[in-house]
Image (cartoon, rainbow, N blue to C red; front, side, top):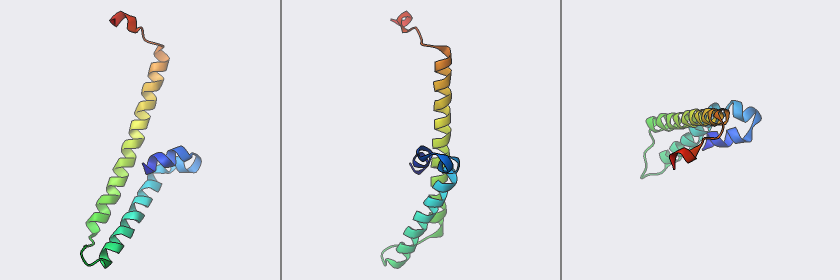
Length: 89
């Protein structure tokens, strides 16, 4: 979702959307882990920080690849022209 927001914002955000997403995921996760260290019923762990950041990175990469795949399909469908669906009716 963060990557999509940065891509839609355009210009410099679009070029660095993956990096910005990873940085924001790291920062939010770090803030949560710091708060959890001060709450008696919660525990803070560095593996959570790493896995949350990795999850943000993989989600941003999936979004980028799915958008590129969707753009290629759109270009392919436009280049072949409209399909004749009446043959299947």
